[in-house]
Image (cartoon, rainbow, N blue to C red):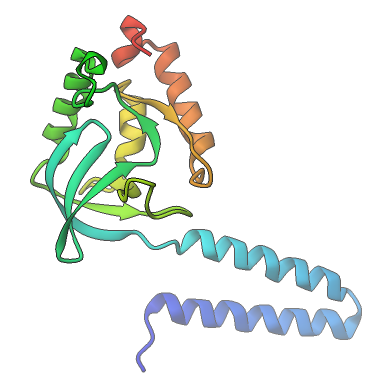
Length: 189
């Protein structure tokens, strides 16, 4: 088995940690409780840092600003962005569709239609409608959910348990609102 550079660095890192901890235990300068805290914190950080971002999936169609059709595992699936909501443009109740919804949809079409994106899932991978729930990453690595908030094309919409980026999203929305960016210019939301 051949190890990657990252794996080799982790082995060295953990080896050094074990040596330091052993010396600390022998000399009495480290207590068992401190060691447990160190490893629990390290495990949490490693889990967050290594969260897999799946990708590359072709965007087949932009349904509206926050819902898309992709080619996923050999079949067409709908993806709904986590944590954001754009104005309606294709709602069954036509009275709910707005010009702003069309603008958001067109903005997203320019960004992703017929392009590849990566997906990051949170706690629940699907919603009650069977749509995939995801954070979508553009080819340049930027998260689309964040971009829509920054540019004022979306507002936050939080549904537990998918709340990984809720605090970031609130900050981005507040900045867009305060700077009157995008739809916040006209107080659409």
